Image (cartoon, rainbow, N blue to C red):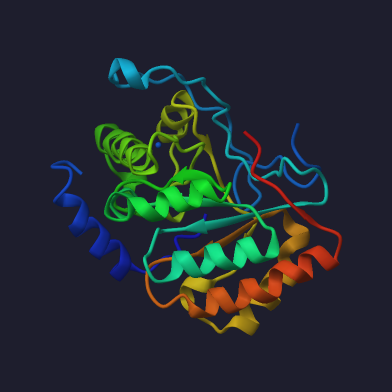
Amino acid sequence: MARHKGRGWHGRLLAAALGVTAVAAATSVWSAQANPAGGQQSSPPAVSVPDTPAQDRKVAQVAAEIAHASDAGPQGVNITIDDGPDPVWTPQVLRLLKDSGTKATFCMVGTQAQAHPDLVKAVVADGHRLCNHTVSHDTTMDTKSEAYQSKQILDAERMITKASGGVRPEYYRAPGGAFTPYSRELAASRGMRPLGWNVDSKDFERPGADAMVATVKSEIPNGPTVLFHDAGGDRSQTVAALREVLPWLRDQGYSFGFPVR
């Protein structure tokens, strides 16, 4: 998986996270592959899952394989929005999604969710789903210890759940695709399906809205899960691209769903 996200954003999030944690885891016909590049990953070995508070233990395990497929079937599309919530861009994305009748999955960074609980609640209130994107968006976490990976995932899970008013994230997306067998199994044990993507809009690079739209149109045959961002800088191009892409997808006969769990 491409590590396509800017280090400046990662650095700012990691610095913020250090103030929070002292140490800073029925398919559609499109996709049974285990990573966005199309490679197949084997099921991870059993791992020792860290103990969690009693009130956090009542969750059902889900599959640990990385999901790409849509629960809306062969013509389903999953819109996924990463790195927020952000007080400038998340409200604009939410407004656009509501106006177009589209549901999406928001992969939230723990520090962002903690800073903006009102936006987390707004995402939930609009019928969207939550995804755990770790505490500090460390794109190198697959090179770190299992203890570090565990803290990034479990702390973010608690932060997002608290910010939402008790709604737990249903997915886990590793920053930059930095999954490990351990992180996938840990997330799955907490009821969070590891979540990949098939179409990277490249909006993080800000190539212009037209370029993003062209990328989605050309790559949507690759699979249903499309990656956008609502934080990490100026996301005006993302908003403009979504405004064009969503009706185009409907016109092509696609419907919007959520990633399989």
